[in-house]
Image (tube, rainbow, N blue to C red; front, side, top):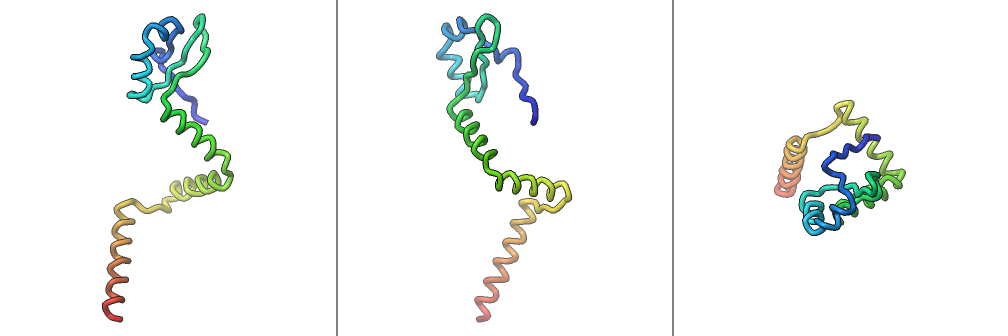
Length: 108
């Protein structure tokens, strides 16, 4: 698992949090920031936006899904082996298939 990096600027003491709560909450929401709240210089909690929290919960649920994880691993393997199609290639293939389908309808 990748280690998450948190900048020194993302740590805030409880006193500063109390004094600047509205602007800190705005930053958390608008800039998708995660703030580590400290007490006596030690991490005590984390402040994150509702969107980030929901994303985190969804990720946890996805990680509980063994079938989804197996599918993700298989997809990563196929990508590493070059077995993938770019969006442009997919669009071209889809248009060609649609054109062939329409041509058959006109003939019939």
